[in-house]
Image 1: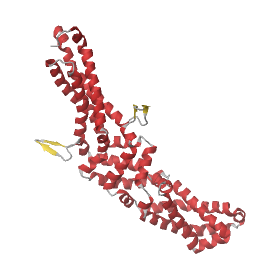
Image 2: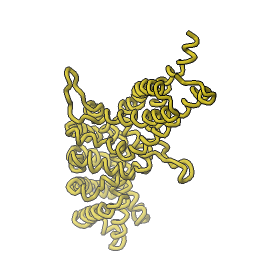
Image 3: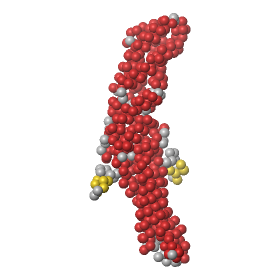
Image 4: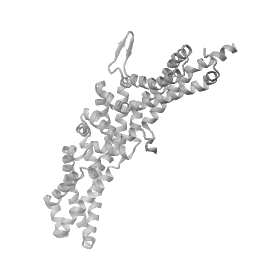
Length: 411
């Protein structure tokens, strides 16, 4: 028995080594897809994860395909309850109006303002508040009607992902964690199967190239086969009593829910929307709209015009417009920081995204993450093959090297 084990035990180890190689190469392929977030090493002997190195491309693709096909930004805007938004801003802005008027008047005409009787100041507050509430309501309607002109959704998503290189990774993990786990663990299963074939082939044809060659096959095919099982077949196919479909596609409902949650909680927040409106590439359009409404309030609302012009004079009145714009921007950004408001609006958009993405045809739905694997799939497969070949060489040297060197027959 011991003689048999001595002669053939090395062959029995081959499938287990192949299983470990299949698991390891697939694990490494996943790690190299998403990490490191920044370039490590010195070119050309360095690496940055496939996803982090192509953030702009993948983020743009996500907006243009997945988001674009379900209606894009207009669909998201329609999902938001504008009456709720107006109510929130009006209720939150009311106590700020008195503070803003007080601050502006102190900045522009401090001595005069400090000497005004308290009843007069109160009247000013009441008048401005009345007109401002109406102005805010009109401004909200104007922004809603022209939202697509003011906000570049692609810019928002790309900027957010570039500022947080791990964000796109987290979105993919939230959607496809099970599939990524399958990709890794299936490497061991497929690797073991290939290892059995490898051991038999090596037993009957003990040539030096056999183990490295089969190691290359294990490294390439275990990765490639697992990816195919994740995304194909697109439509459910019945083979005998069994129903087959790509693993990612079978979980469309659950994945849609996870993607919608992460997208609305971490990317498309009220905070990010307001920041992009005010500081993004189209901010001049937003500023023009704000200036227009502030001028309308101050020039066409007769009572406000009389109060402010009478108090400040023509020159101070013009300065007040600019100061009012700055205050409006400041308070809008402060209001957008409210987590309760962010969560409330996110829920409406999240529900819409979930519903529409979950109803996409499989060919469109797979585009949510398929491009990430497809983009550099050949690189990852090639790396797996190279590592598998090295494992094959290691098997040759460690398990059979002594016997080859001494000329002892391998069978």
